[in-house]
Image (cartoon, rainbow, N blue to C red; front, side, top):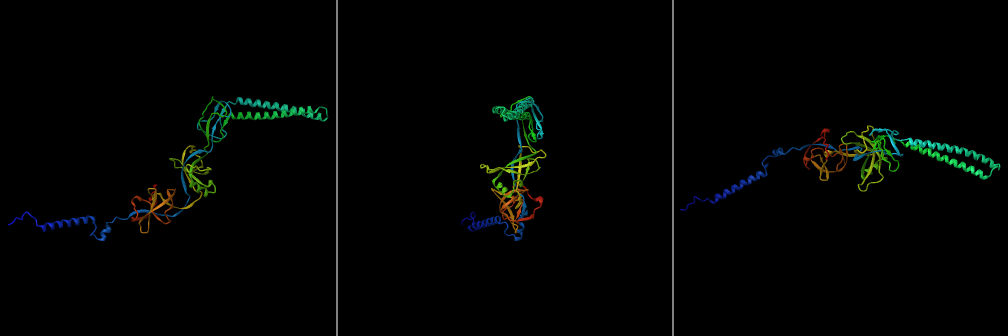
Length: 394
């Protein structure tokens, strides 16, 4: 009889293999479909709740639109103070950086040579007047005598010529007096307008020469009013001139870095041509500087306002997302499902953005947590409160 104790029965081995395969399939199915076998109520209770978001309804608003630019302050008047006569500086009558008024005396150049010149010119004028008076009398006598045929016509002609020469000498002497008096005035250098003066570049005792190479004694800039100069893009420029009857109707706001004060001004003028290399045109706004804080040369933030109000759609800046070079918002429909919507934006307005296209009045947009929302996601919308509005720029 043969020995079978070390051999397994073929049917037993096959059954074992089938059982193992069935168990493995059951395990895989359980892993792949863990919720099968639960009731629909249990599945619903396991789904995550809709994310709560704050929304705002888009509406048309009548606003004055503002466009931001970077600018620089310049003086309305700037003058280099130079001598108009030569001589020695005798007095400097201001402190460096002082505020001076129009007509205030700044420098005195030694006036004595010019005082002497005035006196000499006046003496020459008096001499010419005396000579003219004598020539007038001689001409009158010659005129009477020639009529009576007591003197020849040539004597009359000589007397007439002498009078004409004497009269011309008076006019020459008068012009010399005017010139010398002007030179004397120029020896006393005064402020041509009110403003802040620089340091004195030359002081007492220095000799100065008038003319084309005359040195700069000081620089004066006006500061009661200042210009802000900035470059405006072509589109903004066209919109501005089409909506404004005159540029003075266009308001401008100015702020300085690290300063909350807002200075109010108006457009003074646009340049007469665009810069073809940049596509911009130079604009100039004018501002009062009553507190003296504004100084020529400062950089400033400038906002150019439209001449009149227009109706636009506005949304908080926190409602705007960025997808590469595109801007988008999430709109919540009646079914409370978030829908992706691309938008075209306009300028800022008091922490909000103007929407040029992509939205309609009445659309409900999400204003917070855009990073946690996906298109088609159910949301739990709640009306936005003032403190919940996210004003972070996109």
